[in-house]
Length: 266
Image 1 (cartoon, rainbow, N blue to C red):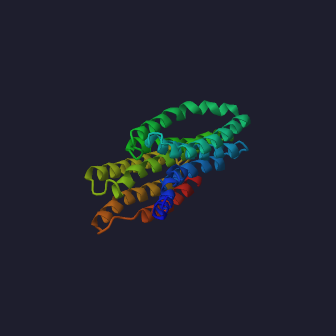
Image 2 (image 1 turned 120 degrees about the horizontal axis):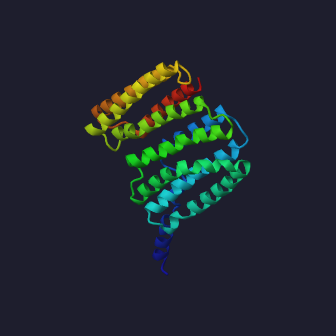
Image 3 (image 1 turned 90 degrees about the vertical axis):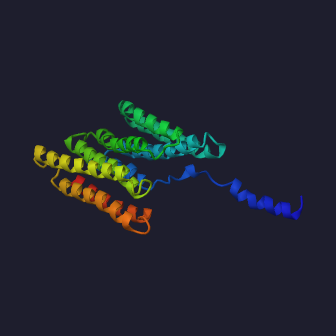
């Protein structure tokens, strides 16, 4: 082999040995969804079972993400290692969790159709579709009552927290689309704003019906903030020369998520 050929071979190696994108989830907004509801459930009803349960949940998320990358690539060899690694770790954590409380299997039927929908959308190479987004949000929020149940505290307060998180995180799916992928789309904008109007009305009704417990009156304030965000961010973004950057969107979402968590724990 000539010197020039050897140099070309070496220069190609970094590309051919590049790691699979399945190792680290690239949907940064999903980090809030897979951590906030789960941790809230543990806060509402602490238990030793929560330790392996949370490990199973987070490793399961990494496995799901790696699996979706592998499926979308039509099972390319280089995308298989993270599936095997995360899947094995999740399996060990899952078995450990069941040793603590095997009755947690009763929640599997609730998650199965949600996972099936997300996997189907991954196979169709539509991981960011509305259907995929909503199904993963529901699954992410459902871990809250699971964690609360494991700690013996699945009560009205836990279900109220689940409802608030579900309303909030589902709304982020169309909202983010109006800022990035569907920027300037009138139909997506109307749909996003319309959804948040419904959330505001539901928040008012929930507070009035329950007398402020378990739905704290502050959820009305949060709903107003979410409606304002869903309205103003796309409008101001459309008037800018450049759209809002993912960093700005993420920082705003982080601040609002903290607000939602505070209200849930009041």
